[in-house]
Length: 280
Image 1 (cartoon, rainbow, N blue to C red):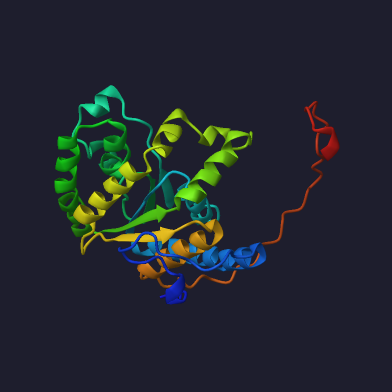
Image 2 (image 1 turned 90 degrees about the vertical axis):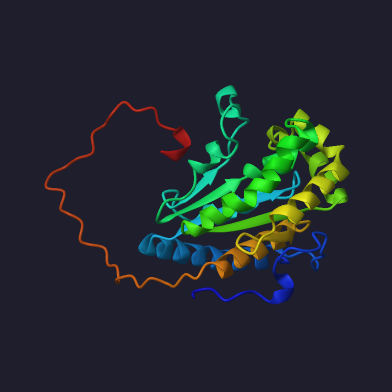
């Protein structure tokens, strides 16, 4: 396949202790250099998915502020949105609440040649919903009983399902939330729900543990990444993702720009457009 795995010490652990530690902070220059290489490999993987008709579904879950959005952004910023599709669903409507629980997620599953990334997923029923009282304990218990079968059906239909849990320490979560309070670029990331969720650290821990115990299966295991160091966490996850997909680099023909046609008397018109003065 196209990508070599990073050293084992830097990979997300395959289910187990979600508090596994990483080494020291990664310098920006080294981070950007490795990210460039990995993003090139993501493009190669994308071309393989298109050529082979593979169906990839990636689930990102984790604590608030653990870096799901930032990781997804680095995965998708250099690839085609026609192949990589990000699904981040809002709260369900009244109609959706009346449907079978999995129904609104199933319609977003990948078709041939697609990679779908869920920024939070059906696992809301195992985390935020029971912790915040948005569903009953019976509904969560039913979900935990049903989800392995749903995911097995996904895999048997030809979908490769990869599930990530991003874990951040309590102290780092506090630091990140505090940084959002006065930063006008980040205030949109801080909601009343985030603040209430923050106070329920151990409720979330118990919900996470129950989720792992019931839904870490041979056909759809959980992969856990410690993301106190955001840069290192992103690289670890992207590298691990590439190692999970058996892509090969697709040979592309040599490209040479054709000669541009002659003007044949064409002159740019002086149109009364509103131009930005500094750029003209």
